[in-house]
Image (tube, rainbow, N blue to C red; front, top):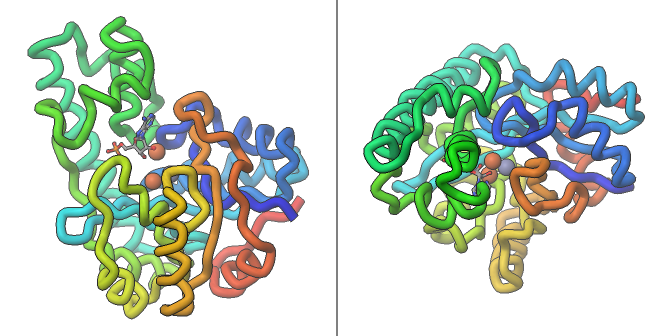
Length: 280
Ligand code: AMP
Ligand code: FE
Ligand code: FE
Ligand code: ZN
């Protein structure tokens, strides 16, 4: 069984539609793929139809933006009730804040580059959760940078003078909100120290107490040392271990299916989740 539990579509900062992500999953020989767009479930319905069409099982999920003592934390929520009011409200709050934040970043960038908010809108749809990648695409479109990667290497880093933060719930509160919605919370790329600070060990204890189900260990942003550290933490706290690609279409180098999750781990996630895995 080839299982990849973390991908993005045009519902957030991937470059392919949900259907095209399912088509890519099929082409790369995956049996199961999770669609986990940032702070939204808007891609779920299209992905579910495409799962049947392309013969790939679909785990519906969301990558929830959160924060722990100022450190950015991404929580994969699998199989939650997409209508649960508290989680829906929290995601809505984050999306609204993301919009204001993106507009503010564009205002700051416009002091030095010929970029407008319309340039960013041209890189997204009304359904899209806007993030720095869409600003990056607008910067590419106006010729200010070569690629998303180049934009993230310089103008869009979190210590850039153009950077603005957005609302995100506290990580432990987010874990509880995901569980309350019947979701299965897995900490995404918890050791990705190449792009900013990562949480110290005691945060894993706090999140495990709050109901965290697992750690995404096999991820390209993890060094061998981080993988060893995270496996140790997972073992100590009795957490599931997952592996995934964090595929963003052409928006990132990550290839779909480049890291995989064991079938037994998926079964445990499915047993704990509120909605079914969509099976073709
Ligand atoms: P934001 O959530 O708006 O702060 O933007 C962060 C998002 O940008 C993450 O979800 C990543 O998927 C994406 N990202 C980070 N670094 C890069 C990069 N070098 N190239 C493309 N996308 C990136
Ligand atoms: Fe992303
Ligand atoms: Fe992430
Ligand atoms: Zn992701």
